[in-house]
Image 1 (tube, one colour):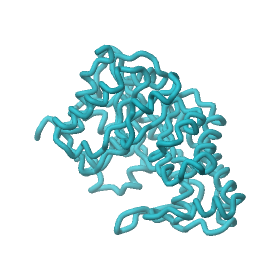
Image 2 (image 1 turned 90 degrees about the horizontal axis):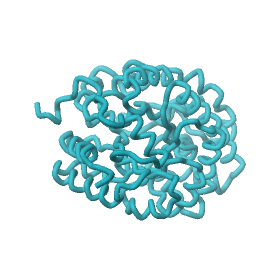
Image 3 (image 1 turned 180 degrees about the vertical axis):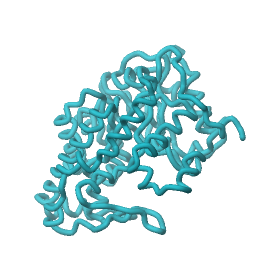
Image 4 (image 1 turned 30 degrees about the horizontal axis):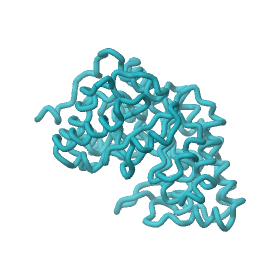
Length: 360
């Protein structure tokens, strides 16, 4: 077994700023010794220890069992020493808690238990049930928080209203998400009803995660790029802004709206302290468009993790150098870790960041 295949036996030790302090300072655009690093989907399919668990438990078992969710969340921290851990869960737990369950299709993808096909279906959703039905997430966060011992930041998360609505209205995964956009145009009252219910559920869920110990929150607007610049604000951005305003969070909020690279002003208006950036744009150019007090997260191409460690390290170094050691940069991918990612390339990415000095 190579060093990349061998997980560490303990959580990373403190050296200078610890990971939690480094991550939170970067979220607030304060000076750090180096950029913090974590990766979206860092826990899960790429790790052999996760695959071993999956031989015994289903994905939903892992999500719904606090001890197992905590174990999976901690696996990449033990192996790679990331500065932040993110709760192992799924964006669709909010939909399930509201009364629209889901499962995985045999051929891959998500299948909701039913499709929202009418206003009466939307009326039946129960956003007030989130607090009771998602207690397993709160319990998992408590276990993770204890294990991290204040050395590594803990991130909670939710999907955005727009992204969740797409799955709910399509009835699951789709190659062409069209029904949410159709509802927005054809029946704006029904669309707003669904958005209001999702807003309530998401706020409740995020507040629960803060109470359970989350140091930061991320809102995944994964399908934001399906909207053009003319409709993004009304369909997604403004609803995210309402969530952040009502949440009045004591912890930083990150918004990652994948594929939304022409609406930075709208994203800035959400009130997020950090904006995630996908890999299709120049991160330094985006940074120059934003106020100095808004941090950026990203934005390495996930495909780099299928390349050699040398190529991954070189690309990571180029990104870090392009940012000039600026305050308010959290190093991450522009989307999630691919399941085929090479462990030695993940390690090369992390090591390159850890050896980088913001003063260089």
